[in-house]
Length: 403
Ligand code: AMP
Image (cartoon, rainbow, N blue to C red):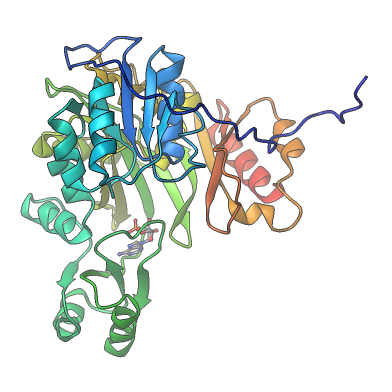
């Protein structure tokens, strides 16, 4: 008899993955797309993984396109197409096999979405993704549409920094327009000299300079919008970031009902103006009691991970429902919740201590199957559910520190 030590804790991943079959089924977008059909996703990170799990749970097949052989979603998919997002052959194969394709991250080239749309249903559409994937476009679009943002100026050259800083005031944050995420590609600058140094460090690429706002709170709204323009909004989450990375979300957000309603109204208005179909998230700053839009994400969002355990429908099932043209699911909150991100840093000093976490029956652990635990890398998260929000928050913080 084997003498394995109990409990067996997370971390021993079987990296054998479904071998790639060539897609022979061809599903065209006759809506709704029902179980048995193949759905595709561009991007194989944790968001793609949770979409894949939701879709497979509901009886769909999933094809993931991601260049990384060990991609978290690829491990869960029926088929992992290991190719670049611009690979025409792979896009053709994906389009031929799938009834519909969605995306899990905004840096998928909009051109790839356009190419795919010739073969199958694609949501969200290229236009919305193109706005969200470029911070300069996104901020300019928000301003044009009349949505409040932090003061900002576009910077396309070193010579433009002086005027930009005069517009935003100091201190300010210089942020690269493209491919920045989780606080990467951002620098806090207090003077023109610092702004110049940061701009050089970013290689002189187009940036946005943003006035530094004294934040009372940060909140976000995840919503889904369908082809008919109907919206289903999840409860407002309150978010705490550390070093530009989401650390903890609390739901419901500790804001007045009026402010929560205003955040949901603004998020819905943004989705409407974009003619958006799919799941999206809008992040807000709250300063002086007012909401400012920080960012739009054309996909499920880290701050919506609480929905996995705390809502009737989670954001990934909702992504599937919008993609498949099914009625949108009920977004009701079943329990207050606190969500904590588990970063690769936890692996540095003998952790994580899963036994301490799993000792609590009201904590739900989600790990993403990533083998290399680098500092700052999102490895998983856990949700604490408690009818009493302060108790959920206290346990979340205690476990965060104990992990
Ligand atoms: P971002 O990647 O732009 O969402 O920034 C990551 C985090 O940095 C935000 O969630 C805030 O906590 C902080 N941050 C970003 N921009 C500003 C700003 N203009 N003023 C104050 N804090 C900011």
